[in-house]
Figure (cartoon, rainbow, N blue to C red):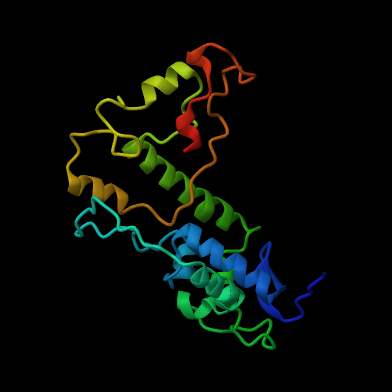
Length: 224
């Protein structure tokens, strides 16, 4: 079955005005904003100039929760959400605060500035927004949690030294037990969205063909 979206809206591609299919464009914009922490963001022109300050993911004045409630979701609720999914994506402007656009007004100021800022082929988006956000988040998580896989870990020996002592620090907890809660929140407040760098250099200096030696088995922690 082939579904062709004939509803076109104004956008940008490689710095040029471009008409995109409404569903595909709306889905991409929604995913970009979620990954970059920009769902409720409005200062797009300042962002393109590198001057905008985005809202933090964490309120540093809020206490840290030490437990989570176990919320059960029924199959009926899942089916209801999945059924409404496409409509929710197409109506993402309402959730993200963006104003709807008249698709017949192509080439005028009605073209959304957020589409220009998040042009996937524009250097400013790739370098100054996407890569910068991924690097920022990765450095914070590396510093606080020593997450693996990590690009600074090239051998099994480095892996063992990189991780905190599991007898003292449970997996997934802050690596430095001496850090004060407010300092942790202060660092986490600089995280934007949930985009991180892909660790392509992890264990790059090791032979990953497999071995019977326990010390050279791929660490199970990277699969959790």
